[in-house]
Length: 291
Image (cartoon, rainbow, N blue to C red):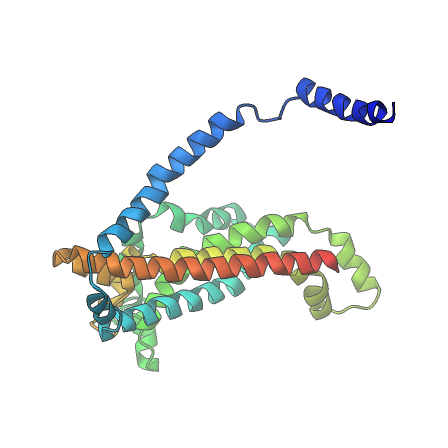
């Protein structure tokens, strides 16, 4: 008798599940299409890269990894991408704050200009930056007497990466700033908090996760950038060469195995960094919720 009463709630629960199916029907079918799509677009092409790179022997792979030109290209790519992402973290937050908190003539135009790097071909962006920041350009000619050279230097590479990464930070931070309650800031002001305390204690913790996400996306985007960099960098050997340029150069020399090997190294390093960033973000979010 007791077992019958215990099994009745389970039977009713199963009946309710049958009467109320999942919100998204056809899980098996949609999951199948999802895996098929990801396999055709992502998994199979990436697998082909590793298969092609496996044609190299271990001594050949070691010589390729330890080549000075390749190492300097990796160093420039990662350092410039990190510097550009950090710069976008600061100025992207500032741009998002201005767009959200202030109303002024031309605000809609400025808001649209933020998305310009998304729509503008990267090669066009590189030509424009090179024309403006070269020694004879509008801005470059003013920086030249000060001893600051932008075009054909690592600074120019970082500038191009800042240009293409800014929208990622602005568009991830902007919705969070719009949802912030201004009354909380007003209450903090009435309690005697100054502007720095309000920013560090109220605003920054609220936008921190989204800001971190935007910086991560900008960093990931910058690692694979090619079109906007090759013009302003000048592609000077062992000075302003980035990893994508090394890959293209090897392809032009019909060194397909070497090009795919460099691409595999870049892929593994980028994925490891992004995975670490995501895990750190998840841990920080869990720590914040536990508080």
